[in-house]
Length: 325
Image (cartoon, rainbow, N blue to C red; front, side, top):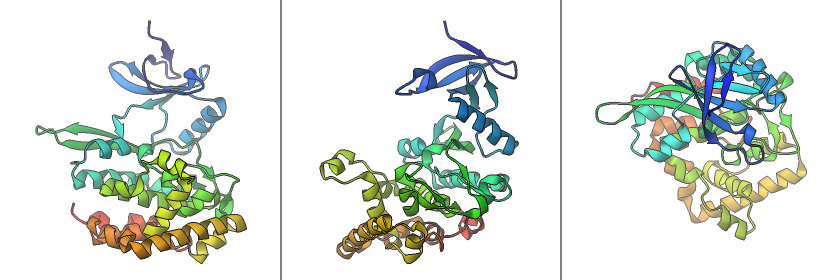
């Protein structure tokens, strides 16, 4: 018999298939649930995450572009979320023919005026950093027309469990990197000097992926790297310095760690040697395929120097958004 849960609202949910298995504790797996012919997502979470989610939901009440929980059960530590058909990561991988207009619609939906409160007038903009901007945190719903073409209907940002406040705008310094290595900024790979500009870099990578540049970003040879004694983070840094330029002084100053500065310089030197042999590695070369306005916007977002990186305000007002797809 399927288990049922009663939410704080009094609504009854029937737990269904597991959408994501937790390796160590089955109870913390993510499940699909049904209630009154609607689909939802169950997350059983540890108490600190449960309490954090309640605080975030209160801070961002009414936002249409953030996937917050809509019901909960305190006794079982369950958060109930709206159900989305997929993520941006999977959608782009599974539908290579997804029209540019729909890809752009997803990116634009994340940054419409309705979500400006996320970046400007709420804590996550003035004092906080998301720190985990990536395509699998962008949730998407769609329908299909008569020809079977996907039409995006809803987009939301999800998973805010590692967002943090930066009092006074000071960079975050941690002994470890946070977020997914594939989508981190150069400073994010070190865990030091992380600011709002770090989110901008990550979103620049998301734009590249969404517009068809996934082959340049995704690592598919982890075993080969391991056999060569190369850590994924090292390979990603080399790629990013190859694409977007060498490690600048502004980055090194913000890191403020001799060991990390030496590591970044080393990766940058390897990247520069690679570019000498293959000049086409530079984004200024292969990024032309995205169009001049997209390339201009993304170039500013992926500047290796966080102090010179395009701000999210400049991204939101860039002319590319008004360009017809």
